[in-house]
Length: 264
Image 1 (cartoon, one colour):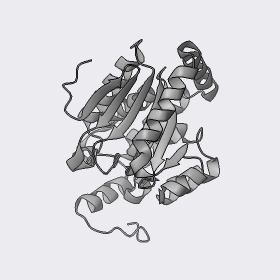
Image 2 (tube, one colour):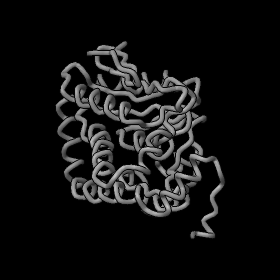
Image 3 (cartoon, one colour):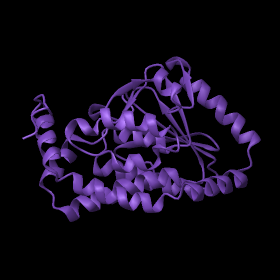
Image 4 (tube, one colour):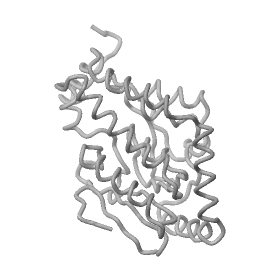
């Protein structure tokens, strides 16, 4: 596989396991257009790779992924609805490339996974979180809507817990995330790599590749996500031009505190 990527690294230290490593450390692996493009490309390529059985997603830095990139937020303010809809579709296709992937996908979270970054993790089949991990959807704090990530979160946690996370923008620690079933496994940071490798080794030996692929397709049919994604894509694009979103992004970019009690 071509490994000349600018925002990610690909490792294949085990014949059947491919590791995708988010590699924008100075930006906390924030999602920009290039990272979205490269991730989508690699997940789609690995989906067709017969040698691949497991895809892991991790980070080269302390943060897993902080959500939208600062430059993307700036651009969002000046784009028309069609351009925002196009960007929204690209992000949707990234989440689909993970959710619909025929391989077992594992997120290894050893830091903050926020907003779209939390979406990357929860789109995976399995989440291993270290005691350093943090999770949350901060969109409402800047007047945005966690639209696309809401499509698949209810397959992982309860509606009640999802509402609290989405509506309050709260950031929770790994223990809380495990308690509400947002993550599958909670391990110490120093043991994260070992625990994931052990899990993968057992999975590869004991699970039929064809059965895994068919089972994933079956479960996805039961989830019936396509119409939900289309609705969320439209809301994601439209909410970027809302009065509150413009106000929230201005405040964020100018590093000023915003008080939503005075929403003028």
